[in-house]
Image 1 (cartoon, each protein chain N blue to C red):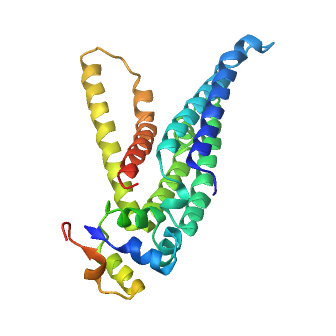
Image 2 (cartoon, rainbow over the protein chains, first blue to last red):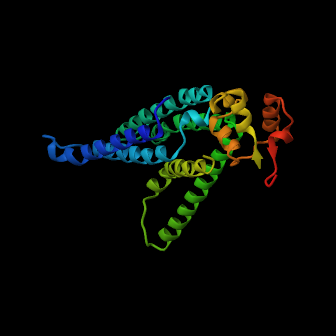
Image 3 (tube, chains in turn orange, green):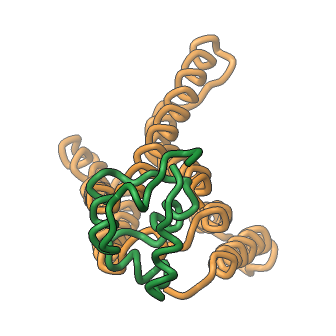
Length: 196
Length: 65
């Protein structure tokens, strides 16, 4: 990988801006009604790209933080797992609209979980086999992320109890893992810069 | 802790990447050791000393020395 930090961050930024623009303009430009699902996907990926740009801008180059073999193994294990997760999630959402049987709905609802477990396994293997400084950075970033998300959920729990906010339980539970991942990415960028 | 890793690396004509490859660590780790932002573990310090053929105490110096 030879892209500089700025180039990679710029590409994420450009992708995010283009997708945001597309999501905003599509309802006005398309000759047919655009499904909410498509708009949601566009906005979601756009926000993901913008956050990716921020994290990528502040982080060291991937080729500086891991040996080529370790990077290759991580990508080989992580990317297919995440691709499978996206497919499983879309399939699960589609099937749940067409299935009533509780046992079957349980299985279908849990379809996205195994691919995420494999992605987490890829991350754990990366951390285990990284060098001592990288392991320190990863563990510190995970600790910060876990603490911040836990604190955030505790605060939200108190607000929910006091009826100040009303967050649907399904949404609250689903967002734990993505928030931990986001917080971990931001924390890792900040922690890495201490050693740059 | 102060380190003379950069001086010894440059004497050998190695880049940070090359030294990282020989030590089987990341380039960021080599840079952090050279700039004093990270103190290596004992096993890594021994590997560095063995690579340069020098005693550990001639490569890594306590702050102030």
